[in-house]
Length: 443
Image (cartoon, rainbow, N blue to C red; front, side, top):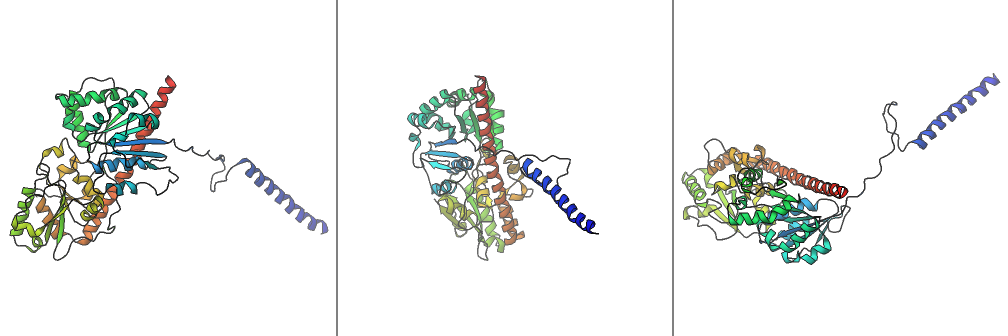
């Protein structure tokens, strides 16, 4: 009996020792012990920490004094890449756009290492002396048709050095046709960059890229490397003055909008105002509440007396109030005055819709052209409807709940696009850096 009592603690001591041995051995030979892992799978040591990304220096140039929204989209896409320093060399910063640029950067340098430098320099600040010092990895020509000539000397030096990648943003695809003297000069200026594999041409919609491939590139001289053409949606986030917009939908007013420069060559104001006049003549209760906001710049179009009480002019607004005002409308109409917005140019109304959360009135042709849109983010016209027919139908069939739901889908689409732009631009940067590394190894 005494032996049995002694044997029990001895057995417990032996068992505990075995458990302790195996436990200690496990901690000595592994960095971690995952739960619920089959014993047949060996434990692996933790992966070494990922090295921090290499610093990236990006210079953004705009010498024409326009295209603020496109500049903002480009600045946002690059500014969200880690360890990025951005230099801005812009002729003008119109309508409070600096407030939007500043929102892209942390108040103090954070773990991503973002920095905005030289925010107040004009294009002349991008000089030969400057680039010899900074040696930018990327140069973005926001209005390439102008910028390539205005900053010729520093760009020539960077091409010779062979360490910089150029992004050339195309706004007027028809100007790149070499059957004209101007087009021949443009292409001639970019040809050395193309043949060096050091330039990416950016368009603001897929249909412009297709036009370049089908109608413009066949006019270009033969080159040792094919041009690299990419499309992106020029969108970015904006903190609106009304994050939950109070739609201007009341018994007295139902607001819809037409935006853009007050230019009859861009938008058919005569037609849309005539359609509004005819609708008001019907005397319907729905029509009587409609108010059209004209958001834009320049000389205001003539407003017929019969519709003057149903048209509000919002002129020369800064960008944040502009997008905030637009966000209160239930619909944005395009009223294109030219078919070129379906072939060789990109409309500013499409990204304005996404940024503000105001759905476009669109037909199938527009959706097929601006492929980054879909039915969920527009008010789709029915067969045979014009803009005002669709506006009237939407007002009659929908209420504030539906307007809010549609607006949120539009803004969610915008978020997906600007996040996607960051990923795509990051991938392009990684790609040309990898190519440069291969070239160095071959040398």
